Length: 134
Image (cartoon, one colour):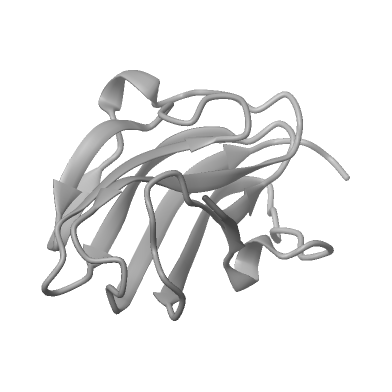
């Protein structure tokens, strides 16, 4: 089990939050062995952001991967459980309008993988509203 971090979620990288609706997207290219329990921190979300929607794309040909999508407080807040090798999953509509009370990251957790040497990528796209003055 490892914690991996995409470029957009690296320490010191903050999202550019404009007043109104913002979009964020990041792709994590798999270059290390993937195993159940791995967490990939994908993107930062600012304090006060209200999530409007999002999706995760799994592109790992030759390996069936099970994932959840959430954040630091709830590992499956946005996607309870999904699996595929080249698939797009939308976030759970019941969790839309979730408002962050502190800055966090949207994370992908690997629940299962059929090939530890899987090569490919996982992408996140999310839209949020932010109405705070800086």
